[in-house]
Length: 470
Image (tube, rainbow, N blue to C red; front, side, top):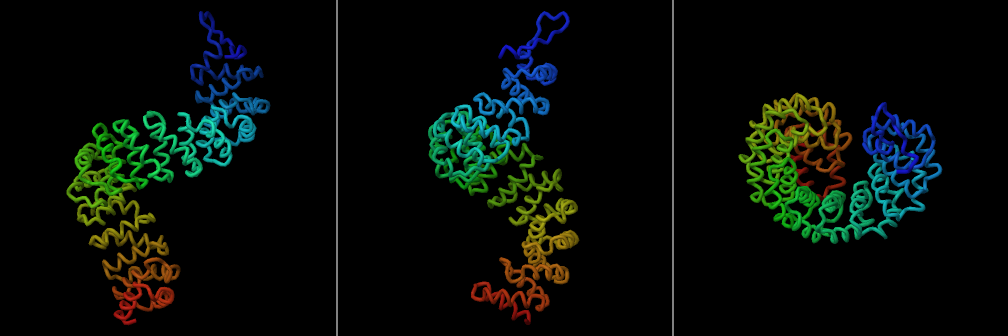
């Protein structure tokens, strides 16, 4: 602590009078504020980096030191110790623009300094702006890319949207060299996998890392990220089982269960831990995602039916419940199980854009049209010309044959998408097979056939047209 920073805060009769440095070390803004005001009033900036950093890290309001800090940077922007100020300011405020020009001066002389990594990480996390520091980071990696601390900066680069390929070889090499690390390796594996890194490039190092850390808490999320990135389930099957031996009932286990099922992993391997997890976390939002994933993976209905029933009793109108309704119905689940809760859900979300998936699933599963009639009418009034409204039209026509219910909305849709939309022939066929007026679709069909007359779908469309008397 520089001598000038030792401002005495005298209290009547005190045997011990804390210095300014002692107060800064407490990390308590309320104890620091008034001594800091006096320090700022003196205009003596010896020890400024320590004072500014301590105040910001303690959660003190940046406004109090703004003018003083700017004045200090005017003469010290490129000073090596300014890195502490830059890092603290970026972490504590949403104002990176205030230090941008000073930071550029600092980078010119300190780009490869070891402590620069903290500045880069703070900048990337605060701004997501990679271009300002791209070249400087590259220079830093040339000297320090194998250091343990480099793992944090690789993560920050990927999380900020920096291209994977920019430092892919260095990242893979770093992971290969740190397979026994308990620190940043798990975060870097996740960042790599979540931001488009090729799973195969880190497969061997991840396999070795999991041998050492399969039972550690971070291993489960890493395995889930591996699966979500398209990694081969078998590579993490053994480690995942070992992880579940200690974490099967944790809240976070849901992400591994869902990722495993979505990736096509063997259901039987996780059946027992999933069953126990569902029995413990009955009201967790994760229940809906795990059950939906189970159904989507072809799992049998009875295994999750009671969990679904219990979850919907508490969460029937949650926006996220739509995924559970859809997967239950798409998988062939009995509509009766979700009828009452779905009615309540539609009362709250009838016109949400994504509700069309629920309408489609209900109708295709054989649910009674009257349950969704009024809600669907409102949805069509709001979304008649949405490109993917075609699936709602098709589902309604196939389930009910009631052409008048959708005539006006479908006419508006055809005016915008007829003849060009993918899968439009299924809408034409559904309209014609339901007894709809051929004139409504005559011109769109003519346009579509002119462009796609040789496609396999054309034969079925011509047949439907003829059978409808067109």
